Length: 184
Picture: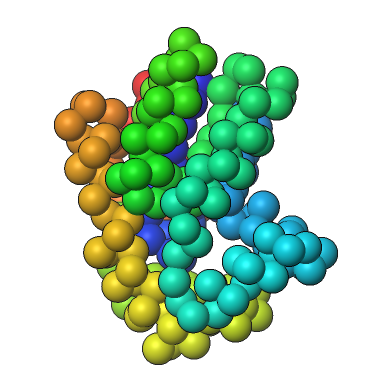
């Protein structure tokens, strides 16, 4: 099963991805985790990504697509994947669709978590990851970038009839139950 977990920063994608991975016994591919690991190791990719993210911007499509396509070719993804943080643009979505169709598979579900903006800001400020862009001003910039550049991905998958919209407010368990209900 190939699942895209979608939503704005702070919606709970990473938390729900862990639960989906455990439930369906498929791996989690998070571009954020890949980027954070590279930033921590201070690789050339990590340095490039850090500078982009520190400005509150998104990593360019071609960089992200290349990283994801390379990762998805590993054997561990043969039975499916939970994608978190990708695709973030329509160009990335089209590249992902092309990748899967070339491998005889596709997206089974596009799960989007809906959370009010005030709640998102509160969650991000309280999660304490210590990111350099976790300030109220930078968070608002990230949310604006999300609305302008990332939300159109939702429409791309709506046209394919794959979108499952989930209320992302409540306990972790309640939200997960809503996701499972939508997937069944």
